[in-house]
Amino acid sequence: MSSPTEAEPTTLAVVLAAGAGSRFEGPNHKLVTQFRGRPLVTHAVDTAIDACTEGAMAGPLVVTGAVDLSLMLEVEAKGPVVLAHNPDWVEGQATSLQLARRLAEEIGVEAMVVALGDQPLLTVADWLAVAGAEGAVATGEFEGLRRPPVRLHRSVWPLLPESGDEGARVLMRGGAVEVEAVTCGGNPVDIDSLKDLELWN
Image 1: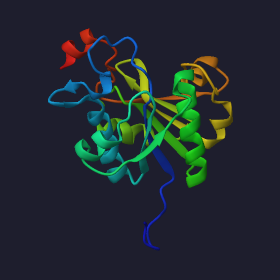
Image 2: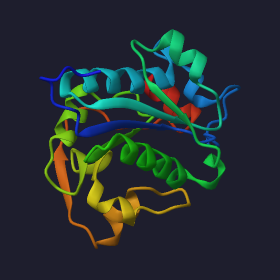
Image 3: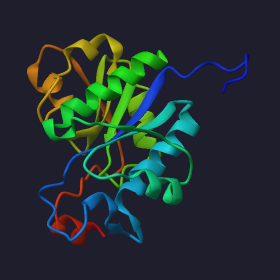
């Protein structure tokens, strides 16, 4: 808990890790598959933990669903996280984002910064750059490619979809909200397949 002299965090870091990973054909769920010597999801979570420490963000909140990550993260992650199970994960990523939104509203933060559990090569600098953006919607831009992390100010939360496999992308594609592109230097690749795993491992 913060001391009276410390400012309360205004941003919640969120890692979405609820999907089935249906395009991954390995023997285990992709998030628990070994990547560079550790379970894949721990890379994303550890980076989020460091970003929360350096950027004074709340969290990270890890939204789970298809696979229980609680014990693995308790053992493997470099620090504590807030876990939230999404019982509606089968209905798409939007439901995980809505769960994160509800928790963010309870905490009382002004914004969420959201990345994916299968993005193992983002950097702390990527998280902090997007978290520091001023736009209502901001996204990382990696050599011209717009990818998470994405910052969502509370003013746009009511516009987020409630179901389906798209979350913030709906806002970014729709044109109703101006999107701030934030230059990032990490690697935004997400591991969707065994080919991806072999390529980046």
